Length: 244
Image (cartoon, rainbow, N blue to C red; front, side):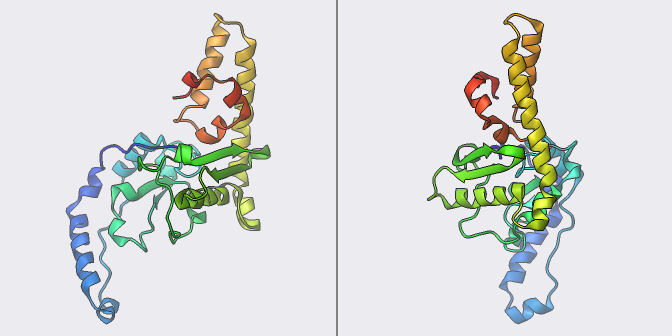
């Protein structure tokens, strides 16, 4: 996961229907349990609109916020509610609660928020790049540890990321195998580029091209940023100014 700064709220989330929905939700919540059973739950229509997906491309670089897998665009991903809409219906259309998420990751994320919640990559207080220690193992297997085990949100987030990347049962392990393969291939590419960059003499065009490729592949806009930056060869040989 990387820290994200959200831009302007999409216009489709400013619709009058959504403001009406929130008013109706307040009324619905004020009803007795028996009355709520007889009353249809309010709704304001679809939240998956083209301007929302375009905003995801702008702010999240067309990446799944959990795995950092990059897609052609956000139209290829699910719209995920950071806080489940079943628990927090008032946040169903809230811009700060909507995230681009790969379909497989969305299926593996529990539909109920754990006690303590998760780190929010769009919340400046939750520094997901520092509060989680990322380690890339053999074959794309990924490990996530909280920097501070007393930080419940970091602990919950680390456990969620491990589950999504590696699976927890036979079905999810097979389902996440493609993700691990993609990560493994990208890691090998990074290692090859580091060797190439080190090999070429300073002042040559090949050195400059290798540097540019390294900057691109390790960029926040590229796939698997934090896992690739955790490679020992990156930490040992890549200057900090290469990392945006």
